[in-house]
Structure formats: structure tokens, C-alpha cells
Image 1 (cartoon, one colour):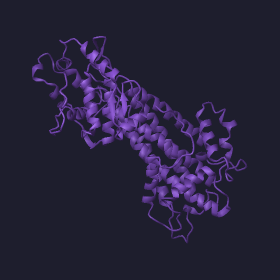
Image 2 (image 1 turned 45 degrees about the horizontal axis):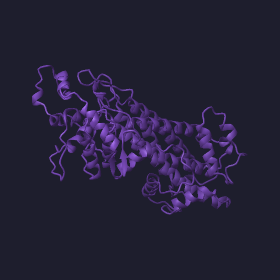
Image 3 (image 1 turned 60 degrees about the vertical axis):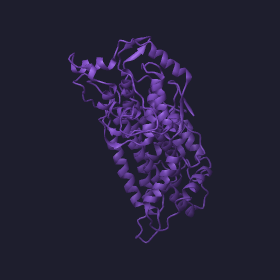
Image 4 (image 1 turned 180 degrees about the vertical axis):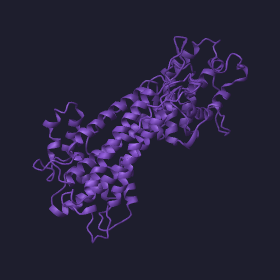
Length: 481
């Protein structure tokens, strides 16, 4: 049971909620919400004010209800978001309301929690939000179900929101934050696997060890390359193949600590931004000490720029892994291993098409890396004249992580084949840490002596990466936020 209090919900906890863990509202948050709601002047109707602002003084507020308001914003299109994302968005919105500045009664947060724990979830289209004035369309679809306006009979009393509560349910960038939070957790998991693929490829191609020498990395100018070098040395500590007396390697190997270290920094920075956003007050207007204050806290610039930055770093990792995969399949670059990592008469294609797939995915990641945050299209008669495109940035980054997971799965697949072939040549033992990963891969994917279907092999290793079923014998490199 995870307690929501509006102050310290972590991305790891949000992932657990997304995967089905139950939640509860803290007593302190409940009291804070009710106290704040009680301080609101009774003669203020936020929805009526906003309706007049948009349509003019002639707008008839008496004909406009909170139900109309919610339904009018259900304008999403596209494929439905997963139940996991919808659950995360509900929890993220509840965490904002729990801070007590949205003018909502505690029953609103309790309604969200009830539906979370009962797994009563809306069908939410993925497209339609620009991430400013909040994720209005997708959150309205959630509010529609919460308020019993979707035409489905359920064994619970639907929420009847007050005017500001209807606005608070759909305001803010909780959907963008939820997608970003789940994406950053996924990215960390893939990053761990990427480190193993890096070390394994170094072992297979007989890499020079000077690129991970601590004295060299200590003077790089920022700490992350040294951290990456330390982990790679830990994995390769007893290697008989990665030695200092080799010729310098191609940049995909030699510059690995610098490139991977840069990605590590980006992961940490992005993680911190999303954690802050998850526990910030993304809403408007805000009720502070009984006064309504209009601000711009519904804008998702922090999310969009952080997701864009991360997506660029992930594209670099995808390119790095694909280049190493290419070297593993090229007989003249892999230090005397057979081309495409398979012995044969020339009729076998081996892992040739695996590199094709990695190249296609790497190219796709480069296309996805175009920043969404640099675009802005005015909405609401130019009043909302600068928008963030945060949900687009978050969705694109989620897609990018899926591509990267497949690229890394391909490199791990070829790494295992290369380790077997290398041992057949030199009869040297693998480093102990790599042996564990090699054995885990071999439980699902056997050594290839002849051609097989590649798809299930890649899919099995991808699943291992996603589910973290490999036993990673190294410490994690990031904070538990």
C-alpha cells in the first residue's frame, strides 16, 4: 500500500501503482485539502468566470454544468493509452490534489483512489494534448469515467464535482508526467543492460583497456565517465582478453565511457526533473490562504525539455550499440571471428539481418530525437499562445526506449554468440560476471550453428531486459527517486 501525500511520490512508486499496487490518501493530506476547500469564498465560481472569459459576458453560466465542462473536453484521438499509463496518470493527479492548493475536497482524491484500487479505468486516447493549460483532453476522459459520465453502470457512487474540482481534475500536466515517469524507469532498466552489452562487446572484440583506465577518466572534466569506467572494470576485472597492449579501438568502443557517461548524466537530470514535477503543484488557479491566484503552473515545459534531452542521449546510445553490433558481424573488424558470427559454407546468413534490424531501429531513434519542445502552436484564440508539447515529448521518448531495448537485445544476442566463438578459438575463460549473463541468455537462446528465426531470440532477450530477469551483479547507478 503506497500512501499519497503530495510531497514525495517517487517514479519507482508510481511504476508500482501503474502495475497494480493499491494506494491510500494520507490523513494529513486529507485534512489539508478540506481545510483549503473550506477557505474558498463561496461566491466565486471558477468555471463561470472562465466561460465568460472565453465566450464573453453574454455567456449563460446557468446553462453550464461541471458535467458539460468535463464532456466538452473529451476530445482525444488516436490509439488508447495502456491501463498502466492511465493508472499512473490517476495517481499523479491525486498527488497534485493532495497538496491542498487546488480547492478540492478530500473526497475528490478519495474517488480517484477508489477507482485505482478497484481498477476502474477510463479508455483514454493518446493524442490531443499540447501540454499547456494542462493535459486537458486525456485527463477529461479520466474525469468522465470518475464522474460516471461514460454511460457504463458501476457498483459505486460516481463523483459529483464542484466547479473548481471539475477544472482541477483535468488541469495540470499529470498525464505527461505519468508517461515521463514510467519512461524514465524503463530507461534506467535498459541502461543497465546497455552497460553489460558494452562490456561483453569489449570482451568479444579483444578491446584495448586503456579507455577505461581510471587515471585517464579522472581528468575527463565530469564524473560520469569515470563511474562508467569503474563499472566496466568491475565486470571485466578478470578478463584475459581486454588488455592494455592492444591497438586503439574504434570510437564506438574507445569513446564509450564519455558517450555513456553523458547519457548517465542526462538520465539523472531527467529523473530529477520528473520527480520534482511529480511532486509539484501542476494546477491553476491556485488557492493559497483563501485567495485564488492565477499562474501558469499547468505548463509542461520542464517535462518536454527534459524528455527531449533524454531522447537525444538515448539516440546516441542506440547508435553506439548498433556500431558495435556491426563490428561483431564484420569478420575483418571482429578480430578473426567468422563473418556474421556463424561458421558455414556461405549459405548461412547468421546474424546479418540482426544488424539490419539494429540499423533500422537506430535510424528510427534519430528521427524520434527531433525535439518536440521547440514547437508551439497557439490555442484558445491566441490566449494560450505558447504551449509545451510535453505529452508528445514523453510519448516519443517512450517509443525511443522501446527501440533502444531491441537494439541492446540484439547486441546481447550477438555478444553471447561471440563469447562462445571466442572461447572455441582461444579456450580462455570468460570474466565471471559476463559468464553469468551469458548463461542467462543461453537458458532461452541456444548457440547458433546454423540459421534460425531471429525474431523470437530478440524478443526473448528484450523481455529479459524489460522484466529485469537477468541477475545483474553490479550496483545501480542512480538514485531511488
